[in-house]
Image (tube, rainbow, N blue to C red; front, side, top):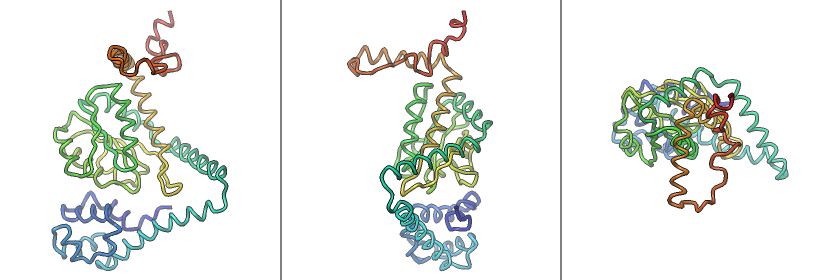
Length: 310
């Protein structure tokens, strides 16, 4: 169970109200915790170009008696992450490959059930409406969440125009790609523990520009919820040293299907254009199977319900 009093949880809870300098410290600790654990207040301040006293005030703002106590908390959190890896070894010690397979799959099934029980249907419907009505849709997922962002971006691009997957290795490049975001747009931020501060900053920027913000994250305590218009919660605990992304991917699948149901004719036209392009330019040399067939969600009965009824 997550410790709500650890250093990362305290940062998440207080981040929205922090000053610019304190947010810089929080970001550095989140993204470089292994280095911060061994830095003095003076060295951390020098690294960020801020005063040592600002670093000390940051520690006090998180509820620590002083910087040394906060430094100990960072070290304890790092140790806890290492113990997680050791715990995985202990959990599966002596297990056969088949037993590991069964255990991991059962764990993923439990996460899907938890997601079904806790995802807010109203938030899901709001997300669908926001995505369809937005002038542009920005999608951001970093580190292990990047494949999720890519998957959503690929299929969303078949449903509507102006879908932009933000790809970057630095916060400044993220802002460059979001330069034109405004109140007519929406952004979908995807992040799970360890939460990405770059994703959080992008969502804060979008919120400041009055864009609609949708988040796909793990719990009501996630800092990703600070700036969002609606929160889609999907369980994602660590089974081993990797995150389980089964439940988040299922939520994204549901989003894609729901969006198709909302605008079937547009989807049909887009897919027909794409198939014609493939055929005209021999992109795949007819190697693709079942472009649009009876097994697709976009069946004849789905796309033309009135015709099939007649």
